[in-house]
Length: 300
Length: 322
Image (tube, rainbow over all chains, first blue to last red; front, side, top):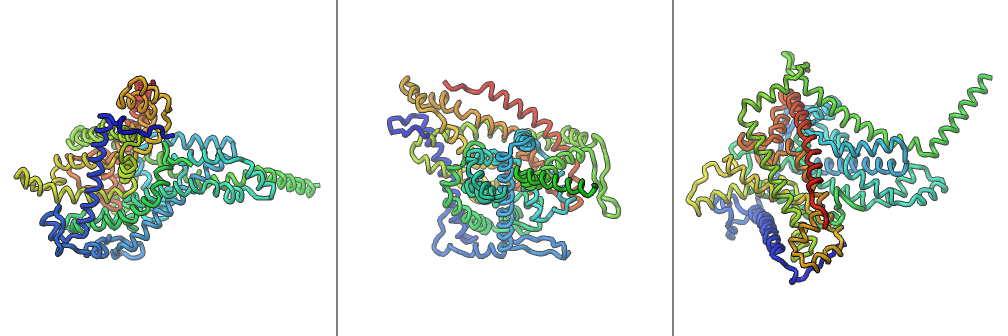
């Protein structure tokens, strides 16, 4: 219930200061993005000459984008072959899709399933599951990454993108309570009618309850997808030989030019190339994403 | 007779199974089994192993194998001696405190005020909302590249043009300038995760209390302090507590900007811990696991009381809706 639709009369010094600060922030953000867009189409010489100046007619180029294909390459090891291999943008894109799509799906599905059985089948185990999620969310356990790496090595899941799926299919996250609340709101009559018609428990879950909360499911999937798509630290640490696009960007940004590092214009063009698909996705689902985010997560 | 008993038992078992199936017990356990197993391995065992690892040492044998050895408190002694001897560690602590202060005294207060502006639907509120939220959707590496290249290309040129000063090291290779640039970036990018949470918390503000405050002649700032702030205090406390708990793990984008080679003067404790895991390859890197685990255990010991204490204090001292 948005209550205040202010008019000019209400506009105080407080709002004035906030408007100034927000304008400053927005100007900074938009300026940086436009500057990057402009620099991505600038020749390297023009960039070195004056990085702020708008390029003259002869200083425009598209080659920074074509260069990404050749320059955004990561050397990896293959267990079947001791010789180094090189992974390019196309393969990185596929790894990104697999990692982001796979992890987002397994995590959302695991969470929704646990929330469903906990909400629909009250039992001592359901209470334990609720407590597990609550305690793990409250307890600030930090710095167990070394142990996690050791366990991944032990399970032969290290340096395997599928290992990331196993690692991420956890239900102890904030979305559990959101799904649980959503299931609690669904009347039990649907399930009872289906049961009378002979539907089994699995059928009731997949054909009745899941479709009812499908919009919430896909909103959370989308949020997780974006977050995994942008993540480069987990790929860096847990499966370095299957680099994603975000990891490719990290590598491109962190090698000095004298050690084979890339020119700023190519780095910026790579940034733009990674930025645009997610920006389009964001703008397409902006209202869905932004209006669904509630305190602690997402509302149905 | 025996045959009859067996038949009876079989029938009884079938009846029990049917009863359990009707109640959904097999479905329940089939669905819960794998997630619970995952929790057992990746939470219970990982954390238990983390504690054990903190008291162990890993070394490479002459044959190239990796061997674990129980070393008691040795890893913790090493960490304390690092703090006593290495200046970098104390600097890391100070820098972590700086970034926590940025979170608590700049990012959270400004975030709440920006959310209030959006909640009031002041001019361009929707545009600001989208722009503030955008950094949480776009890969942070994209912003890191844009910001780094902008600062490195533009700032030295402007410094030379306006102040006649030549920045030989550039900005990010000069620790003091690099830290300032990092702080600006940190503030710039950190609003995104919070704004919508505050706006949604504010949507619960009761209209009559705002109207009553207006009739009593309360200024907009006054309404913000006494009505809007209490309404989202719970959210503020939650986010402040997250920042406090993360003080020991916050890398402050150092890894994104520098990889493993940030200057020691701008280290944070979180970055130091992270580089223990990212430096070196294979067995060489795995030898750092015990010390990283000991660091993690110490961090948890520090973070837990700090987190709960801060939560209690913030709830106690927080504003009450008037």
